[in-house]
Image (tube, rainbow, N blue to C red; front, side, top):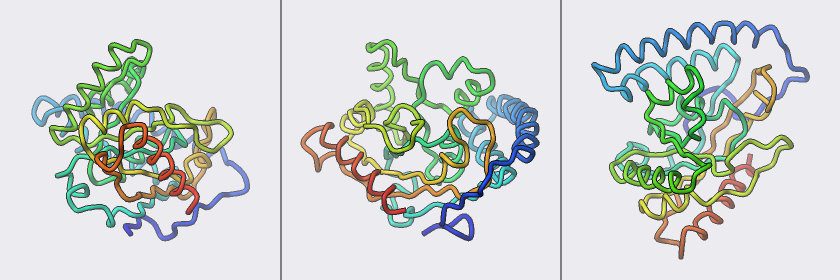
Length: 254
C-alpha cells in the first residue's frame, strides 16, 4: 500500500471551522491565476499537457495541505505494472463525493489520467483554461450526436495510450450513498478494449460537502480495486454492473 499520510482512518472533527478555509480560499484565488498564467507561458515550449503536469500536481498538493487534507492511496501497488507505469491505458471509475475529487485524483494517481468533463465547464473562467491545458475530454451531454463523437475521440485517445478517469454517477449526491452508474464510459472501455479500474473514494463528502465552501481538515482515501477486463464480460452493460458492484465493495470495506 502506498500511504501519503500517517493514518488511513477517515477522521471527522465535531464542528466545521470557517477561519482556516477562508484564509486558504483567499490564497487559492491569486495563486491559481499565477499558476494558470505560468502554464500558458510554458505551453508553447513544453506543450500544454506537459506544462499542466509540471505545475498542477504540486500546486494541488500545496493547497490540500493548507486545508489540512491528508491524502492516502490504497491498493495501487496491487495493480499490474503496465497500468501503474502508464504503459497500459486504463479507465479509472470512481464514486463522486466532492468538488475536490478531480484535483485530488490528479495529484495522487501516478498514471496521470485525464478526466471526461461536461462541455459547460469549458466556459468557466480559469477552470475552463485549466481543463484545456490538461487536455481533458469534453462531452456535450445535451446533444447525443456530439456526445457520441466525443466518446469516439476519447476511445482513440485511449488506444493511443492515454488513461482516463470518470465519475459514472454523473453528479454528486446530497444525501450520501452512490447513484447508479451511467453507461457511456463503459461503452467507451468496451470499444477501446482497455481495463476498467474501480476506485472507491472515502472522506470527500465530509471534507467539502455539496453546496458548502467550508473545507474541513480530514483524511481523504483513494482505494483502488482489481482491474476488470472487457473481454471477461458479454457486453458493456455487464461491465457497467460489475464495475458498480466493485466500487460499492471498495466503499463498504473502508
